[in-house]
Image 1 (cartoon, each protein chain N blue to C red):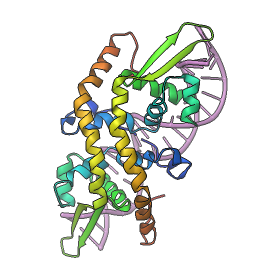
Image 2: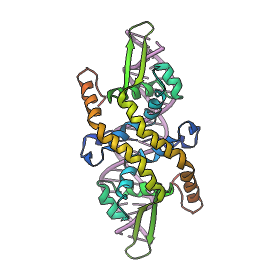
Image 3: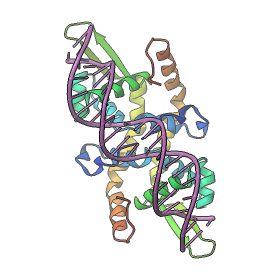
Image 4: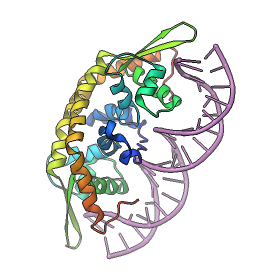
Length: 127
Length: 127
DNA sequence: CAGTATCCAGGATGATACTG
DNA sequence: CAGTATCATCCTGGATACTG
């Protein structure tokens, strides 16, 4: 998704863009939900999310931290240790997000069925 | 959003990806909400959404139609006329989406404030 | 351990031109 | 009017290597 530019524009029409620009990417939501259960270290978070690269995890948590959704605590030990957890703001975001997740679960088959139906109509799906 | 591949994978963990892959892009949500008020023709929809290109609108509505979120009716007149409207499924999706929109409206300033706070910390926002 | 720096491929989006 | 085809561009995300 290439949409990090128009955020500051005339999007008063659509504040949702602010949110979508942040949770609409591949990893943010996974990171957020992974932290739902509690604090995790970088490596733990990485395992929890799954197959995310170091670079993307680093980038994702940094953005989430900048947006005030995730809190980052550094322990000046050696080896270094960094804890990540949800902020109240991040936690509050998960409420509406879960509504969406529920919808997704309930209607996943409907969407897939619709896609299947399209296959047989001689109309291709550009892929 | 470059995430149209992993949809069929092991995303049982995260059905939300199915949804995000479809509404997380730049235009889908705008199109959906534009149709909330009722049926629109292609050109009307284009004006309603704003500065979307013909190509992107065409592509977006096709995908939404394939997913069963939008209904498309063609009138074999000349000049041609095509009406777009939400399906019950599309309408039902807007319910949780609106929760997210509300959250976005209520917390927009909080997010922006968090970003501003970061500016002064010597940490750049990569842009 | 917890990152950052580079390089690179693929996809999303936009502009423009053409068609039924 | 309602698209499709093509081309160019920018960004996202992955792989790999290096650092404190």
